[in-house]
Image (spheres, rainbow, N blue to C red):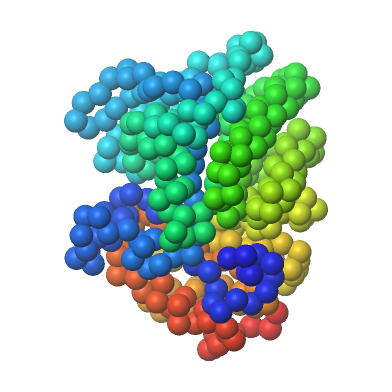
Length: 374
């Protein structure tokens, strides 16, 4: 991982991914594996990400209602969420902080509170997502458990991810338009909170982390969700501060942001980001073309088309996998899907993909008929 992020050619291209729990269940079933089988261990994948408690308020889930098919809870983001157990992702129902005045009056819990890192408990990011989990294990224990077997990355959300979760996308975009400076002050307050959370996380890990993922979505399929100049004024400084803090602690930083970020991609290069993820193909992001344009100014993580994987067509998949490995020439590329592995991907398909990368991702690269000049 470190060699790749340093734009050197290691023995092979690093490979890992983010997996939906519904995919993992299908993968176990279709490959006749045990109930405890884990794709990270089974394939000896090359890195793994962990999430401490990043809730603005440290509190147990408040159950609104629950039955055998779904649960509705209010979380530490003061957000009410509905999780149907048979559906892959939850629904955001409502937000307590539904006016800018309520946001201004809101007080965050201490980012250095030890419960975030050293105690089990409910938290929205770990507990309400693809699956549903109460009383998530203490983050530091998860890090220690994984550390002998993987490069372990911590993670932190930044302003854009927080406002989506705590205020809702509609409120956030509306307030940017109605109260740009007033809302900008609140973005700065949120940015400081999560920068402090990241500092506290690094301190709590006490040398056990190998890197950091910064989560934040500011774009969709076509382009950014809002004016890039507004992003540069209020969001970018906090991302830059997070990257700087990582580097101060000798930790590479990978930014995860969905959608087409072409308008601000060079800003991430300017900030010294080590790699960008997930580079969604459906949003017209292409790691090979980006590598041609920007070379080793930044690393590329992801970009393998999950919609191609979902077809199960081995010829299409082989073409997608081998062509994107061109971006690994000279290092700087981590192989993953262009977001996460969904339940529409069969166990056999993912098994085939990992074997392809292990075979053709060895240096010096031999990409057969899909070799391209870089």
